[in-house]
Image (cartoon, rainbow, N blue to C red; front, side, top):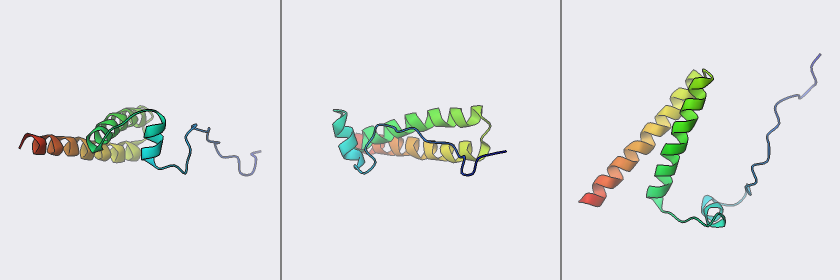
Amino acid sequence: MSKAGGGRKRKASGKRRGSPPEERTAERGEEGGPDEAVAFIAETVAELVKLAERHRLEVLSHLLGMAQLEAEERLRTRSKHKLS
């Protein structure tokens, strides 16, 4: 017999939920603009894609892959604009 409402519990991440991303970044002593944010997102999403693929989460893997492609494209276009 299963318990009612027996869903998975989430662990606290240690982040303050209500603070904007800029404040959370400042709390860690990091600075960065949009280029750094996009690079971080591309790198992080790539790891999430691998995780989703490992667990055969096809739709999630596909969606995360799209986010990765978007971030990488944004990196390419921003670097091209800086060269001009």
